[in-house]
Length: 344
Image (cartoon, rainbow, N blue to C red; front, side, top):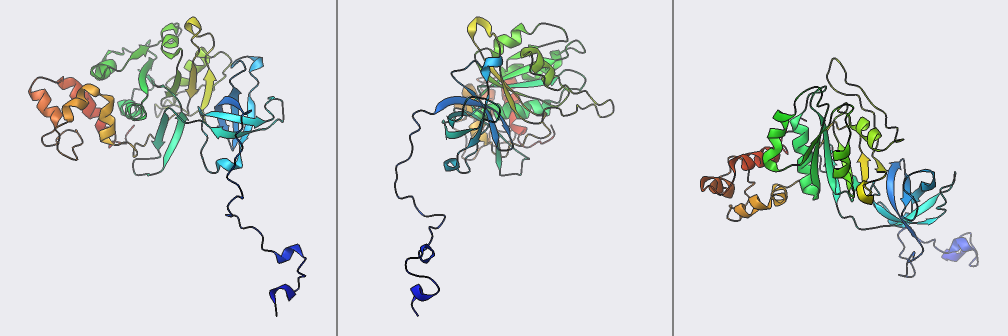
């Protein structure tokens, strides 16, 4: 019996094989989306993306954030806070309006972390940020240098500039903590309750900065002071554990109003950190963030990690010849060792 005779007439459409899911398209032409509107992703929530368009004010009632979904041709390509994207569809920002993200621009930087140091899966936290701001309290809760070191590793690996912001200076002196990072050349700002934040604003002006820190260190309080109306929930420190309660649950990008001399900036408030895995960071990449030390490792044996105890490491030889600052080498190795120490 012929295949046509099995219950189908040769004119029935069921007779013909349906296209398989992986069938190649009949043409290589793709829409160019010349009219797609550029914008910046400021929030991601369960498959919906909040985008601020470039040609609209970024603050105030005229900002009109656009809600968008990812277009199917993007496949599994992740879209994260900070991504520069192109939109089509309803970009009015009206209630119920939904646009589509059809293009994602190439990223200049990517801040990553893993769930822990044994997890090979990297999670992108923020894209296109220039500065990583590590917020830590001097007291209540006590500072945890392990997190600071790990955040510095993540910043150097991502090619981002670090900034240390110490809060609650009215409760304790910052001198001991600052001395730990002075030899690394990490810039810092000290704040206290009720004081102005002009120095912080100057450091943030004209840049996209990511704020990270443990819960309870004053990160959300800082964001609310920098961006009136942000309404980030403020947590408190547990009297028993000495640790803060997590308040922010997702990354949120906010435009800074009235930057100095018109230099507007952006800040990204992130959830309080419980873990900051660094499985993706390679030692040979990390030392590139320290050009003065990197040039001293050119004669290191193959596979040298430049850590303490490495035989014939160029850093030790440079210290012995008086060509390297011992404190700076020691501080670099402490930060390097933070990759292996998950206690933050």
